[in-house]
Image (cartoon, one colour):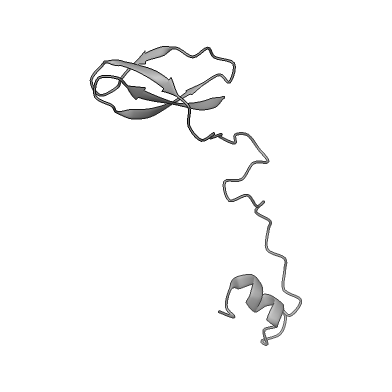
Length: 86
């Protein structure tokens, strides 16, 4: 699926619509004034869906257990992993 951008010829409102990437360019009704809106050329946008895609670009991994879990001292690896060194 692709995100296409449309601009109304009546009120100049710009909005996005998700359509098939192979969809023909056509006019649609403006959601504000119900006027005719035409597809415009803009910067490309895409939407990642499904398992394996992460919005941050990084996979979330479970935290590794601390090698010093049985002691009261903390190590630099634990501080870096939790952000406590900042």
